[in-house]
Image (cartoon, rainbow, N blue to C red; front, side, top):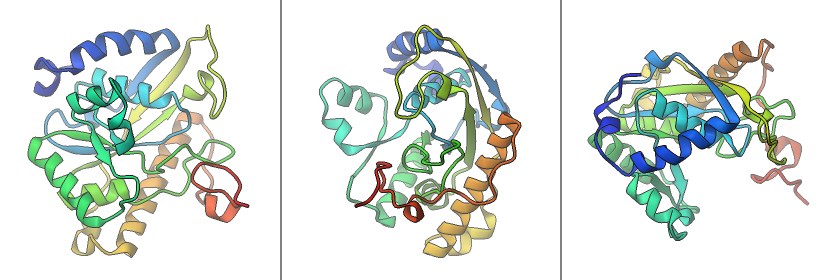
Amino acid sequence: MAASPEKSRPSAFWPLAAVVVPLVGVFARIELRGVENLPREGAYVLAPNHNSEFDPLVVAVAVWRAGRAPRFMAKESLFKVPVLGAALRATGMVPVPRTSTSATQSITAAQDIARDGRGVIVYPEGTLTRDPDLWPMRGKTGAVRLALGGNLPLIPMAQWGVQQILPRYGKLRFPRRSKVIVEFGPALDLSAHTATATQPATLTRATDELMARLAEMLSGLRGLPAPAERWNPAQHGQNETGRLES
């Protein structure tokens, strides 16, 4: 794919890509779909489903192959890890404070992204899906909050096949090279929500629309009907780590 200026310009992504792309290729044959939906230039928020600890690598390679530099919202604590923290800072990853959910910080992050013309990858589920059949579960409002706060296109991304490489909470299956389909969807229309973009009810509705779109896209990849309702960990006695509450 034609590279954007942020990919073709020398950066810390180049040496990382030289290592990560071939490594991921050992495990995954990635098929890209809908690449035309990812903006060639400018800022955006990319919202993928999350069903394996391995899929961030697949998502990063897919975005790189599509012509953009992959930047994630990453836990602030990761920036303190030697070597990893330096790589995160050098590639412009966005730190997320563990205890902060304030709208002000989200809007500030979105404004920074928009100003710099960068894209950012945000998992709307916030963690691995808890749905027993690996469908997208109930989402959190972070991706929508960023998109609305910065007036950025919100691009849904569905991926399927990574669970054959590393099952959720399982062990890496090697040697194994599995087909993984990654689809970029058209930007979600958020125009109906802009007038009340900071209201919790609005953010929840928009997030529900995003998760429904992801489920619809994943249904197309899997050839199965998606469940009518999203899995809600709170209703099944689970916390954010997937463990049962006592």
